[in-house]
Length: 125
Image 1 (tube, rainbow, N blue to C red):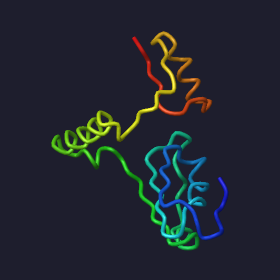
Image 2 (cartoon, one colour):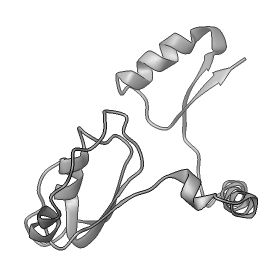
Image 3 (cartoon, rainbow, N blue to C red):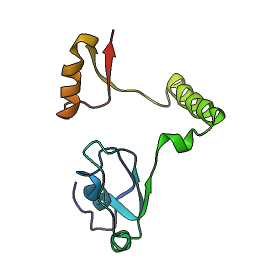
């Protein structure tokens, strides 16, 4: 990723990786853009000086987790119902990168670790 210095950039960056991609993600945002961190596959993000958010264009930063958005059974059913509805209608397309027999779970894990996958990886019994 490179710093977008022409005043353009993206509105939102969703980061599931964490430590190794966080700073690069901030550099991709337009002024007043939002960074949504929801994972830490490469490790936790180091503490952030909030002044950095100002110097990079008054950015917004949030760290989300599923539990907050599905705190009640009603919320869980509503949110999962939305997702299944979008998949069923074709609004949300699920990209399956590969399927591995359960006996090859270690191979699937290695592919994920080496960033050889894009989308979902399924283990099939």
